[in-house]
Length: 227
Length: 350
Image (cartoon, rainbow over all chains, first blue to last red; front, side, top):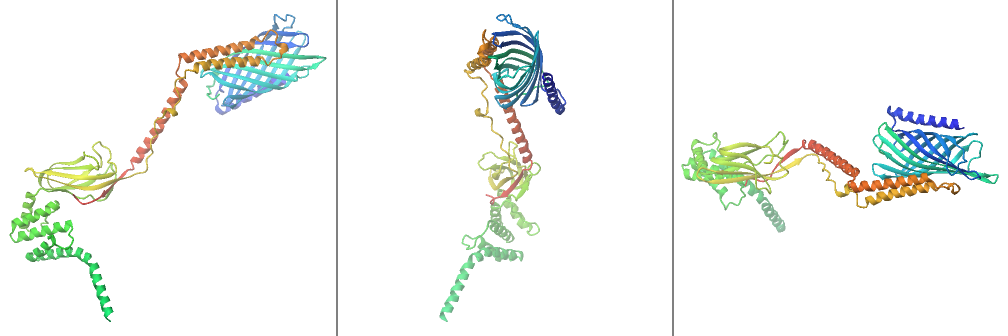
């Protein structure tokens, strides 16, 4: 499931880039970035909170195929180690790929849709997550001409987890600062995903992952002003 | 039967009364015609009688300026034939004073008559301008023909003066005698094309004895051209953005940063409370970053009070306006090339 999902996301991004490239025969407007994320993963499965944290690294490609539309494809990977207060938690490798589409619906509001595939590798098993989210984010210039800010929320109506029933509550939120200069494209974003699973055996499993993501990129293919 | 006779008499009186003005108008012309014929038949004494009737103040008939001048000319000529030179010269002078363009045709008048006429010209300084003919012209290539005259050698100045103006455009200024053909390029002294309106062609003369005379003719100029576009007015305050940030801008920058920070904390609060032990330091991190950015923005506003984006936009708007006005000027210039001036004569020489 997760492989198909990732493949679909990659093909979609490729098609979008190809469509914009065909019309202008130039690089699509956007940015190529390196990403570093501080991740915080928490689980309470009835035996107390297990918290793992760690740095993830990856890359991100942003393209703007139209004036009011942008696509982001991000890949991250790293290891989450037990936090000090939960030394008994299990270290896990984590890998993620996410495709996010943003469409400007109002001058201050963008609609968002994202497809995320994530994999946790523990000592005992590998768990795959795949999810689709839809939401919106308000944005405004924090420093005119220098930094924009956005705050948003999303519902994840489709979440599939290996060997587990999907959550009955899945929501996400995010806040992001972004500087989009002539050459550099920088952002610092915070995101949190919350998953509340149905009660099973008298225990209701809750899980969340939050990240503080720093992205540093170079703009490609010129620059759009209406963004 | 009696009533029919009275009616016929009344009709006859009415018809006679109505016909009198027409008869009066034609009588001067008839008298002049008869006098001219008598003069040509060398019956000058009989011609004199008719001519004196024409110029008599007691004449019941209307006499036009041209008819009066013609009568004076034939009176002068007739008296010259009769050897009454002084009287001849006096009548010729009267003709010249009324129409300085008056001249004697050598094929119709004798040497003696022309000699008396020449003396009259010598003794009378009269200058004049011929009424302009109707005309339509291109001011870039054509000129308005004019004719002036001085009865004898004098310093003559002719100028075109616009109504309501005191300075004219000199079209002739030199010693002159007789008729001079001139032209005016329909431009004012500043080189601009004369605007529509009423104008005078004024002629002044001064001879060597200090005698002066002046005359003028009136005419109107009209412009014929496609309508021109008005240039756009300069941008007013309401059309431009404020280029300096208001004093409250720095505080607003900080407030926006703080609001973003609160937003970041709100996002972190989406998490399940069961998982909140130890807090959510990443959410606090984005909140701190937001507040720091707000502080940086406020500092930037205090240090750089000019809104560069607004200044650039205002510059763009001014440049756009200038470009549009340049386009209007270019189109107007093209239309002005199609300008034609219409000369409309109005009135007799004064």
